[in-house]
Image 1: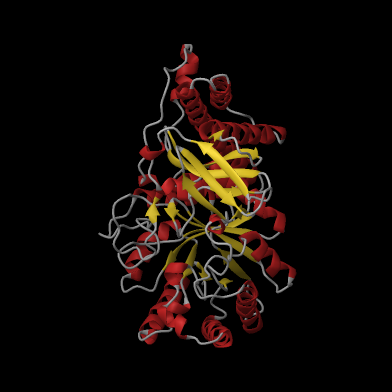
Image 2 (image 1 turned 90 degrees about the horizontal axis):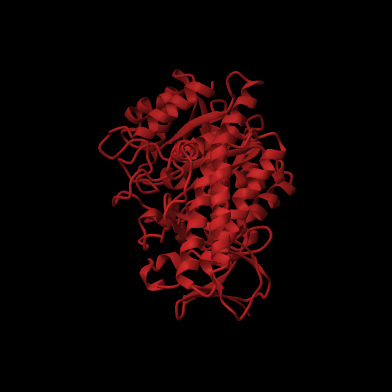
Length: 511
């Protein structure tokens, strides 16, 4: 058995949910299934394999709240590692290494990045030299983490700014699809009108669970009206997913199917009905979402692939001229740490591509800062790395994302995901700020100390030439919705500040 142990002084002061997020992954970043427990101020992770790997865990940072951080590659050992020291080593290596990589492709590194990285290195060295003084080690390692994460902000912003400048040399206005998902709720038109400044594309939801029920005719009438409204406002239409098997979206009557053949036939019939009804009006189809992560229906990997293939082929057969994509849920694959029966998102997508079905692209669902039905919070450099990693498949990408605007209780959120940034943790230990001359002081104070938010994530996706579309995954929070407080319009109908920010981004950069 491949056991890893990590020392955590005062482990009982942390929210116990933090330990459930820990997982070990290999070179491809795919988590191994394991069992986590706290034992005598040690985090113990038991795995069936005895290979070295990287530990990832949500960890508090001084300025940005909880983020998923990752160590370097570690071998299995009976001797425990110092968790904060290894997270500092991994975080510093990741952020500094990405800066050097970008510098090699002509990115001009900001002075604030260089200064903060130097300070992070100094703190890390002090931590390594303090193994006989655990309090000093942990405080210095935490300071190294905080400084490295602080350095990632100006680094990411420099990449965004310079990449967008380079893109605009070839396109005065980017052709990126930019839109919002609008559900067929009774108040959809009022919401869509408020969202119009953000959109050149409207994501019309056509999930089987929403449509194939007792109110089917009423819901279809609303979708008809949505399609008409989008045409009147010169919007492109992104339709789907036609089937959503995310945990919160599976209709209860799905569990009544007695065999896979009946389920497969019903889903393909729904896809055929939607495509036949709306072909010629849709500019892009999503055949399915949540297929790679949800296995509460008891589907085998082969059956899941068959379901995806059936949906794609149905769309391609009935509407061969319109591109079709598939949504990829939780593309970092954190869910595999808790379940060994899921499918790695990257392997799922690769299998579909190899079948040569005519797939036109992939949509990565980045529903951040929600757990367990979303993705754990990440910094901007980590998001950039994800896009680069998925580029190896050679297909255009779309980003479908949400982030919570508030940590307040959201009774209308049907996924029952928690906002990770609300988890309790002790405040990081800090040392006095190092002495700086006036120029350095001004430079560091200029770094905005805010976590990665929706605006910054959209900007990062916009800076990536392989990302052809950006869709905000939740228009309004007035009716049932998947993720807590993630809509651009609050339950009381008031527009959230992010909506204005996204409208400005579209006006500046996109057709």
